[in-house]
Length: 305
Image 1 (cartoon, one colour):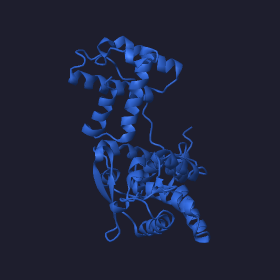
Image 2 (spheres, rainbow, N blue to C red; image 1 turned 90 degrees about the horizontal axis):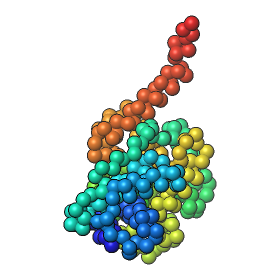
Image 3 (cartoon, one colour; image 1 turned 90 degrees about the vertical axis):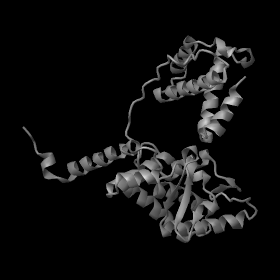
Image 4 (cartoon, rainbow, N blue to C red; image 1 turned 60 degrees about the vertical axis):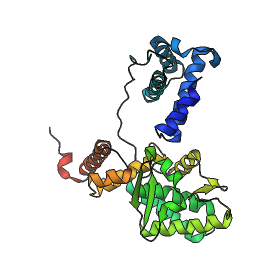
């Protein structure tokens, strides 16, 4: 079968992130298993029809109760796979050509209020000053502070190694989507916390291979699930509806814009390719303005009757 070749193409030629490639592979293999009743060696990819794909997506929606967002991603995975097969000459007709992607509802990004974030970080700083040897809390606090202070994606955080950090100039090199790199400034207080953590890490795991990953759990680079669980635990007392690493990225952008940062600066920090992607956060800022107005301005409560 051609799934392995497709995933290699996604990873190495298109330079997609590992998590993206894993999602593509999972979706394609799931479709093939469904179509062949878990006998993938029986499939002839040139026999796959548009009706087959529509039936699979319908069954996913009905039996798995998947959201439109997930169904859209699965359809995109199959589109990419069959386009790959078409270019390789494995098939002559693309069965995904007439597939309409499910529409996804547009939601404003979730974020944690700035005052709640300050409460969390101040509390952790106080606790750490009392218990300086608490390794896990120092690491977990650093995870949250890096995500919130620099607006990082989860994968970007995980990828940071010691050689990406320049203490003399106060910078960290971030490797984003499709291996695109950017350099972001780091405040001195955060640099100091990074140094403190590195000293703890090097004492516990002196034999880490170079380049040394910044964040480690039990001597290995921190995993996506470990980052997620750390953030979920740290944000447990907040009012945020979604307590995830990406919510902290949204929180960073919202805080920056609410405090007067220009849109282009926020775009560069976030590593967005297009300004339109960053503009969604202006809606959040406006929502915060309306909330503040309703709470504070006397005319907002005037009875019109």
